[in-house]
Image (cartoon, rainbow, N blue to C red; front, top):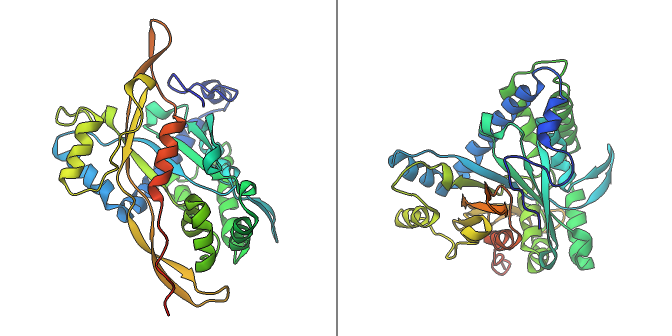
Length: 348
């Protein structure tokens, strides 16, 4: 477990604050503006699909407060496959290529052996200046799963993989990394980069999905939703309203608005982070009845909205600092918020 204690100081190597000083000219500002535009565009898509996020916005706005985002989470599969355009890594590195171009730096890592998961979290060196969220990206360790489940995952992601879309993403990432010689419109470039945050393979076969779900609900979720946003996170510390001074009062306000909430609040003030979330929304998702089709719709979970409150801890006695990292036990519980019982028995 890693504890990140100050504004953006790296536990995996270099300090992002030092890195930014090595980038010439106004590139850090260009990166931050593209990041702002990209996260805003993803928020619009996500909040349309997750009405609980819009209810939270309304609750805080009505109280004269401020809505700020603590972090965004994404999921992936630790799989590397051969394609007509070369080997493609579908795990954390698939998303890291755009994060690097945006100026984000890895800050720490967490492992979840019982769930076969691994995660890294990231911070932007200009997060305060441009109000940029932290990022939490996880991957399923596919090679740790039973052979049948592993086979279903591998066959699904290789089925109808959108190579043209992947090439378009690579082109956008190259333009992002070439900002030392160009000044692209941040909103246009962000729109192009959105192609990375989709499911780039065909919908899974229903029976394969349910087999995967029985072992890893996380794996089933990724087969259905790919790299779509898993959750955004309302930041309690920035709400700036006496009506909702803490995570308890905020969660209770959401319950009063009819939002189904997680029963527990994870973490304590002593460890620096408390988190809870709404229940995940259900959507109709498309699956294949057989490998060759036809397609059908079944209900499945998509995303939830999280709220988080951070506290000062004392890594050195007498020197309190706001905790900026993530906690393994909290995250392990929140991963389970997308658990789906699976669909009902196949239609006759």
